[in-house]
Length: 138
Image (cartoon, rainbow, N blue to C red):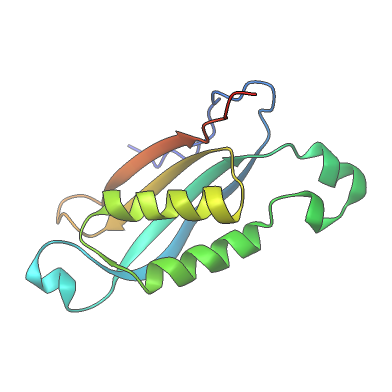
């Protein structure tokens, strides 16, 4: 069975704006896991992320200020993840949620976190979460 490169490119609840910016398989090093040997040295994690964003303003202006700077997102996630020491991927995913929503104002995203080599007979195990920022009623 081949690797599915389209796993994250799906529609999302924000139907008015289907544009997405993605980051695929960003590799980061982190202390993560519940077993004693996982707490000793950093392991490789993979981060794939699809984020909703109206791309028409930046397409018209060609100004990075009018879009979501994926380089800045990568740098911030690398910094946060590599300095963290979570026990579970689920907790790390929620910390990423906070960064994306508070620091980058991402309204909707799908996050895939992978832990290559965690299970001997699997290439990678992990989780996928999808979050939409709750809009406050006017």
